[in-house]
Image 1: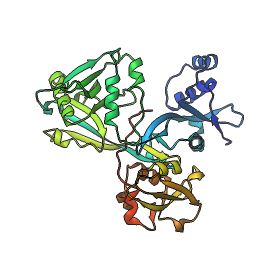
Image 2: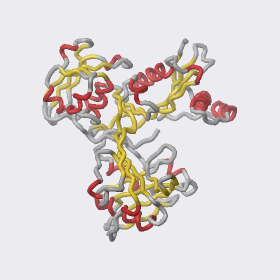
Image 3: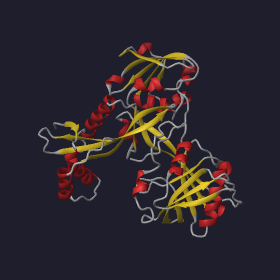
Image 4: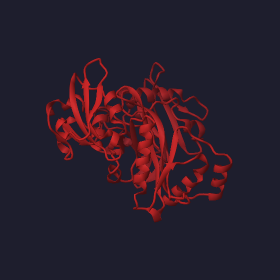
Length: 411
């Protein structure tokens, strides 16, 4: 089957939406979408849509998009491509359409100067074929309302209504995610919240301020009813991007006290999520009934090995030869030399294509991605059967160490 990948134009947006609607069994007013795309096309400079066509372009077999995010990596700003909308018409599945699409997308990201990519998979094994690896480790906490602490509050809580400033939420967001790899640069806390009527969605926003009136936390929730009772759901999800952020233990404890006092009679449980590096066990009091589920929420991938190594914050000084295998982006394939020392920029160059014997470590792009971003560390290499260490095993922690890593965006 001949496949022709290329970027879609704004006038072709209706074709993209048709494939998505069919693939995900959604609804679409095809004629209306076609009319809008062709009569008043609108280009989004932060979103690039890619399609795989038949040779004559009469059929769009499959498609995906990637959004442009400015994110942090080891204290430096970089570009990350957030992949979504991955879809194939049913009759063309299992013909390598998405592989063609992904290869084109990664090539496009590389040429546009991106360093990393991220996606939310339906199957991790499927996307490992394209170089992605498990990332964004999350703790989802479920706390019975009856077990929340009772305490006098020194701070205060106010509700944020439509039209109120979201600036305090942005300040909390920036402070909470400071130092996290993949945390995104935001000009606003949420453009969606500014546009949408949260009250119509039955979603509610509350801001916590300390005794000095400084914003130190907030939560956004909606009500869910299930077999476990009535849930105050603060977990960020695609259908309802809620949130629960706090800047210190006192803010967390006082937010819980407020929630119990204000909502304890109407809800049975509180659900929220945090990056997995945050341990709350010592703050919960009664832990027996509290639940914590840990899982990986997405997958990350290095798009440009040279950029990732140049930005990587290493420990001390040293030099390594790192062998990378990347079937999707040949530019990343080969042996890379990295020299680093305190206070100096990393010196990175590609020194060979097939000289495995020169490498201190040889690894696929998947494992390299997990290690360099900090989801995994040198201590975890022993559990990676596809990684081969030839030398300097005791020093690999200088470049591969655990770091805070979490992307708050949903796409």
